[in-house]
Length: 237
Image (cartoon, rainbow, N blue to C red; front, side):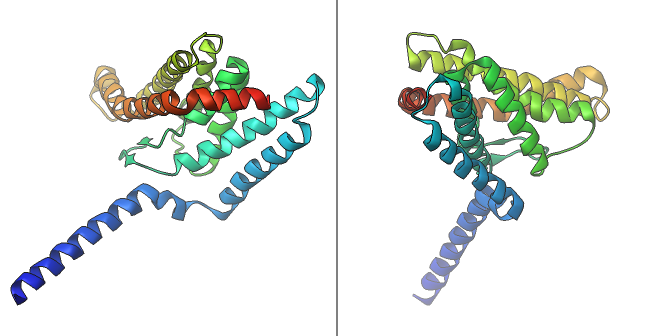
């Protein structure tokens, strides 16, 4: 009986430790997030909500202000979701609970141009909150260019079927971000692998391993919730 109790206690301790380790890995980014970063996220959320409340009944002359307020809210949501790491890659990149989706929803509602701009701004904010800097071209491809590609979701905004249009938009935005990430990888891995060919294969495989999962999660949530969210955003616009 004593041996059984000891074994059970050890098994329970092991499970608890494993669960704790998993939670730390998934949500650990919250603990590392700087205080000024939280202040920025809060300012985006509160400022966006205040602006939207102020101008929601206004006419076309302040439509741009509404766009900015909802854009700030989408950026804040993306920032928070990006801190939850379902799976973290060793050399950058991770799978999150659809952190790209708020940017893509904004792009789907307002169009490619505003979506590209919002994504680029978010990319620079993401870099400022703890990004990698290896070179200027790498920085541009990994952050403002990569996240600007979420704006490609707006290519299908006029599709009659919102679910299908949004799904195609998510795929387009994900492919765009994937191409940017692969390009950034080539800028780094070419010097560390046996020539450009090896770097291309490695970058395609490495970035595809997490971008595919991220894309599928975004598609699943877009199909389940996207139509309603788009409808609400269009009302707010």
